[in-house]
Image 1 (cartoon, rainbow, N blue to C red):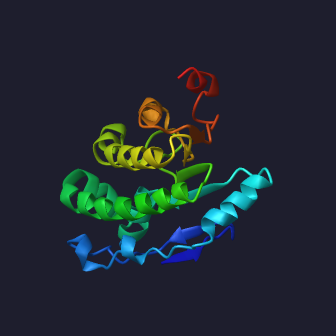
Image 2 (image 1 turned 30 degrees about the vertical axis):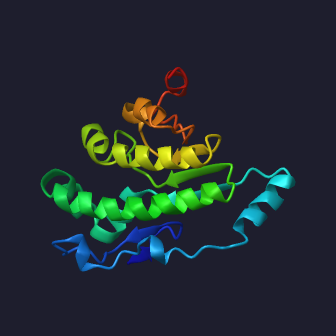
Length: 194
């Protein structure tokens, strides 16, 4: 549940269906059988590419989806003291998001990616060691599976904030584009040297 914020520009989180859950299975989370394919998508993508358009498709970062389902405080606590919950939830979310990205790759997208902030102006929200333990292996698996379909597909991540401490990890697992390199909290020259 979200509401329009005071500025009228952004939505604010109010509550989610897993706020009081003891197990992610308490809520139906769509699986890959619930994905609706557009049989014309490959043709539509090719038509755009024939016109010189660079075509991309995105999914929401599983972290952001988990936050919306669980609430920020619960999610951050899950990372630290309820790891089984977050692992189980992430397995479901990454399976779904990964399959969507694989289908977009098969359809001929030039670039696929993940959007959703995982950092503040000062650091990662969940901390680099926790991100490396929980998110990195799952992201790596999804990216590798998409690159198997099309080795030339570009992969991007969008996150505002300071993600500098995991920048080498992002490059290592196959991200080609990092958006944005926010100069208020990261040194673009230093990042470029990576």
